Length: 238
Length: 270
Figure 1 (tube, each protein chain N blue to C red):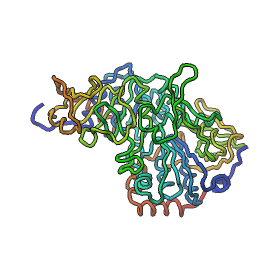
Figure 2: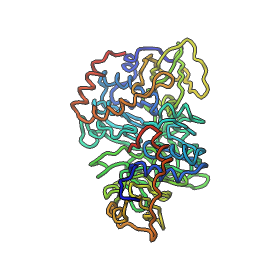
Figure 3: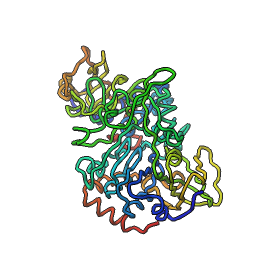
Figure 4: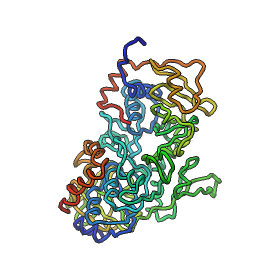
């Protein structure tokens, strides 16, 4: 890393790092925003065989542009199969046919449990968030949960305000600062992105962050990755 | 047998204050025009049921139609918050809103149980989360294996409302593309209203479509564009710009109220 400012955004770094973890054989349950960006990038680069499943019922969708919602028409037009929502959650998700599920949240704790329900008390919340949607069952039905979440003391908290989904299948947390993976049930910082210090990641964490002995620096996005990402036609949305 | 009527007649006849009403459509085919008619006719104290209460329920809640919301994800997809929903929950404006909150899998199972005339739906869900303390779910043992499973009470709305592409003159309905949970909501509800893009002489059979025979529907109303800003596959695209614009319209109570007056209350009923 030279002294110049990076030529990519932190959203792009996150999408690239998540996409690298998908393989040509991955069947992947995709939410909207950064996960959709990551999964579509993987499909356009190293993992063309990766199967994108959107909870609206589209299995094997191949959108040319990044959709705004999980139910955009192009997903249905390009899908291998379109199924009803009850079928999606019963046969495909709970049926155990999905390898990777992406989740985001407003809060995460050291065990990978997530809150996307409320900030504050449930009955009298300070902020009413959208709620769990597919998350509670995604978190327990897929083999591997990938979490994508910007890292700050407000999001990486000692105590969740509400547990929307459980963390036992979280395999990686991709943040704007680095990569965390679970070790013995607790998330550990294993990589930092170029230009990010371990101390910065510590300061952005609301608990005493466990740090791997040999923290590596993330490989920067390649020109090919950035080109493919930007060709998707829209920036990642939260 | 479904009667082919105007939307205002259908709503007047079938939806009463305090009813449990479910408007479904998973991103696609959301019955916006029907929601606007509920608002124009001033329905109050409704229990509104919907997996994804997006812009359509933000409007109903902000206009004071709802007492309770049964839902699983309440945001503006790809954009952010539902400000009218948040204002009702966080500040009680324009009225307090009781919540019954589920997961998508739980809502889907509850609709499917309702359609099957079963008392509850069963799923591997809710376990290990804080949801069970705040919603209607119980854990039961599988009688064959002893596995612990979640049971959710069947959804049986008084009225189910959906939008579809086509009906024929007998009131048989066909929808295609992303068909969400629409078949289930019509079969689970005591009464149902379907708005359609067009009424045709004969439904042309399409692979992967959902066909609802006339005799499971109460009323069919022809409302072209009735899903906008959602979309109708084969007719018009999702108005993504409107969903983005809703953020600014809905953030402020006065801006919202003025917008609703101009575009809904003073709009000509269909």
